[in-house]
Image 1 (spheres, rainbow, N blue to C red):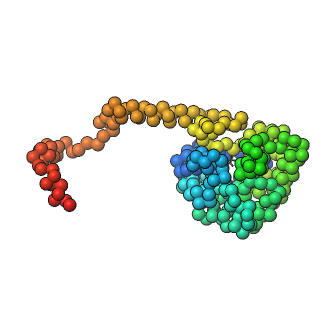
Image 2: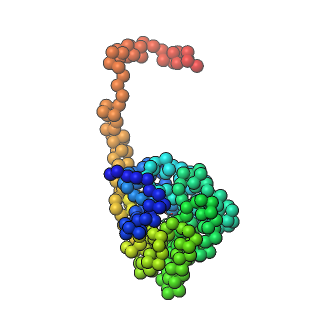
Image 3: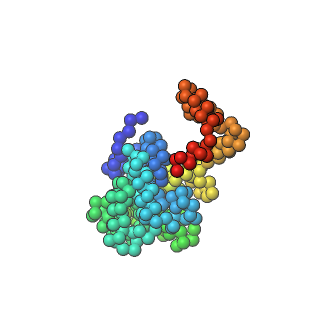
Length: 294
Ligand code: KIV
């Protein structure tokens, strides 16, 4: 597959051309490299790493420094996909200047090309300030996991007429503020369809049905590695967790039973010198020799 560097402009153009946008999360060098090779358009270094990489119970615990650390690793593995850094809890809603500085760290230190923020109309002035600082921004509305305590859990959003209207209007305001795409998470597919019609920028769905311009999914979910929670929208495209487990049990059994490593996986000492080293070993006082080196 011959691949080309994806830019924000390419992502926007895909909507105009009616081409689906394929995006996914990644958090480290090796996975990012595999994702990049697959031709996926955009990699989000999601704050979901708080749960799937660091083992926290939600996304609120991950810090700016941890996000930058993982973004750097992803950047080292990617040549083509657009890299978006996910701004963590408290990094952009307290103070606009801090928000711009933190967004800038994703670009300057992390090697990301854009950032993602959760929220609607209420964060449009922050988004505008980031864009004025030449930082590309992706929006995220619906179930915004940084607000789970406000929502009362990981719950589908936009299920009443009022809530659905608010989502449509938030999307319009985010577009006006200058975001290049909007993630729609866990909202009824009919509302995601309306939003997708209402805005000229791409909508990227996760639990938002088939009519979005693109899709995103957490890589550890779709590979069947993180199976503790399985929202309705998660499809396992692989059972990698099971294969890893099988491989680890095989490895353990082979080591215990002396099967691994056999000579196929071992290095050879030069045949010509083998007699000499064995003679030396049999005739030398090892303790005395060793002491000469101390
Ligand atoms: O953090 C994340 O992985 C996300 C996606 C699920 C959109 O925000």
